[in-house]
Length: 380
Image 1 (cartoon, rainbow, N blue to C red):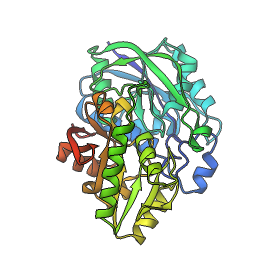
Image 2 (cartoon, rainbow, N blue to C red):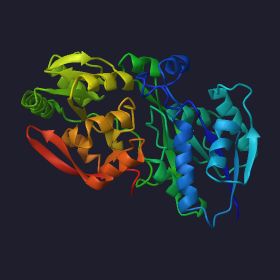
Image 3 (cartoon, one colour):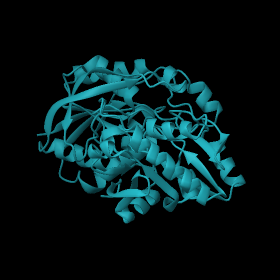
């Protein structure tokens, strides 16, 4: 029996990440002025080509989609032919309303699954229309991706689509989360549960929602991590240190009297701030100035991502310049309990392969104390 898949791409999803805007909602014009380039069409195409190459030979799928970069271009570029265009935007600049109108068409056409490429904002727009009537599956491409609807990367999403079409996966409840981007840009973390959608329940390939829980104070451990990082910086006095986002790194920075950005990227040299809330372009300029550099990252909650979620400023160009060997991952032990693997979605196959070849990464969990954790990337 032929599967009916509704396919939609949010072409502007993730554009604000590399230029340091922490999202694209309401700031598309500014993102473009800063040199932001579309990421979602490339991510969607990557996933579709992998699906066609590895899984689709004996599967009958009827694709319903939107015209242009909202879907048909990516499908056609992947070599998919059984396509029906059911929506066309009146404006070259797409909006949330276009996503919603397309999803209304998918509802009318009784599709089996809505496959989308975007971030939490796109997931929220789709959920507003379809509620829990149709399962949804996301190809991760946004800056904010905390919802449980996303595959962990493009390879996982391709595999999941294959398994869904063959009725090998369980359909269940997934959380749709969203972060207030205006507050996020001011350094405030205000995330809320937007609703419960119907999605695919498969922890190997689907990212679980970010854990929010109160635990016994980790301050003592964070103090140890601070000592470790201070020793690291003092021993490598000629290195520039790029501080990633997150509460643990923020704690360390403030203990060092560094006025960092909780949810942004900052640069520190000789324990002094030399770049605050910097985007990809500014990071690359600093890397021109400083010959040696390291980056300090902490995994995102239970998702376990160190690259590709909330820190798109650390682009493939940046990471290649710094070097995979110069990445320091830190975490409290309590967070690692809920983080079985360290995940990387670098946005570059060559770079993902470098991480995959490592197989494991050392995660600093205290003063001069580390734990070996398995790495998971686009290369399974």
